[in-house]
Length: 340
Image (cartoon, rainbow, N blue to C red):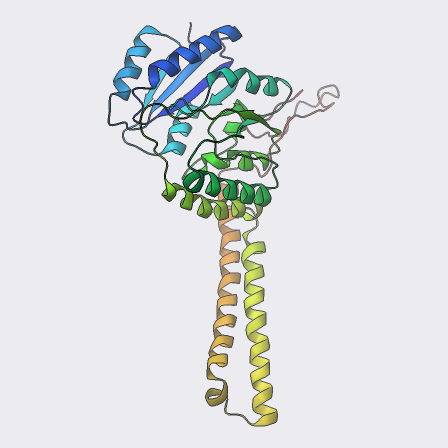
């Protein structure tokens, strides 16, 4: 396959210590994708594996020109591994999945059908999970419920890696930390059309799971951060300002109560209401600090968007009669938008 041949589909699969699963997964992927009949590539990412994962991937690479191997210097985590694969992929549609055989390649055509229906992102839904109910299923259900409520997206399963994306959607999203599980929420802020398809969740046959309760706990912190990114990243004063007004208002009202008590009842404020006086001062000062943080956030946000000429919107398409009217000037368009 020539390097300039248009690629319809890119399969991005991150691996970490999965040497036993790679051959089976590779055979299943090639069987499914060959049956589809469109040009495709596979982007396998070795996320700093300690076993023979890279050796197995390198052997496959030598025998299949559709295979690309991206090797990271160390274990950066799933978000970084996916981002490395997304950056390397050149397909019009990018499909991501785990490398532990808990995602069935036979279900890929169902994702592509939804993409063909016009959706920009299709997410898998593990509707019959077989994970440990206490360590995985209960925390996951709570996290998914919170994420759906906070983001306003009606998805049952945000955490699965098994997804399909139009390439332009990924170009609009910056990934870092543990944000890969929140891609649907981030994509929704750009106007992406999102669908969900039920998928199976086979039990892991070989190797050891790299997930634990520690990662589940970190998800809850990420939820708070994503909520802030979705609602207040371009207007931080709206968030910190409300906290500031609540603090200064409460402190002011308490202060007025203490002043009235001093004037009308001649109370010794420090003796009778010392803790209340300190609370009033603390609330007022903290409120001023929150308002100041909001103002500094507004300045930082404006500097970020203006210095990078970063658009605060994402276009899906542009319909215009300018060319018919002889106006050659074109409006600036963010990456990922299209004109029809």
